[in-house]
Image (cartoon, rainbow, N blue to C red; front, side, top):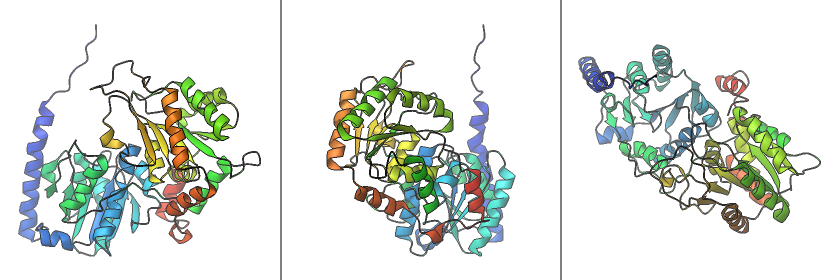
Length: 420
């Protein structure tokens, strides 16, 4: 008989004292050199340079930090905001007009020394002026704080599992949403934030053209109403809904609204999505595994409605303001991730459980529940070319903002062109 071994607690117990020693040592060295950054409220409010590191691997986490950029732009006119990112974050922020520069930087968990060196190079652009390193929820790993500490003398502000490495730690509040927690980082620097903040993802004309080539042909012209289905979630997350129920809802939309269905997902989900497409039949297409994040955002923007599980792609739909019905699991608190009190969304959660049972699936939400919610949304936001054009206009970056050929951002675009 084999037994799983519990991780030894001693290393974790030693981490916080070690971080405290590092922080004291840093303060002493910088104090002697006269380079400790001022952290009084007036000095913080006067900072105009911001380093924005993002290394989290979860799509939803990254999408939910995008309001921080808008909040800084709102509070600090003329701010210089520089992104240092890897992985999914590069794809999410690739075309964000609120960033002055976006630098590909390796994840410090895999290469702390290289990350610190790259951050030092980036910080040189601030020309010796004071700067803040803003660390949001999801960038909480101690390695990010350590890389920021080793790279320069900026004020480190934010949410971290190593609060002793921060000049101004912000404790994560589980009673608030992810977005609200992230905006508290901006408040910690002394700035007010907009009362209503929504995530945003932007795409280029090239992304839009690619999305249109996936969606439209002579059989299905652009004026055909289009519904997006997100039928898959991350492995191990008990958030699923039965395939036959997706089939029933899809056929109901086809029959009652003359809708085309587009199934989206990652490359790893493509086989399951294709199987669902064959079950739905009719005017249904799968684009799973064929889109980058900006292309997927462009695809969602030119759709009319979405039916989604609680997944990363749902947050992209929210970021382009696509109306959606969300099938929510009974065990997950809706306030943390989902768009509460948003008229474009209907969140279907019929039970409240403290945890997910081993065999849990969202059976408590019926096809009748979903059809009723979709019907209500389609009444409030009827499919129209004008509605699609408004969504596209709000998220389409000007041609001048697209990454030039040969630039680091263009290279990132090429390397991630088929990632999700």
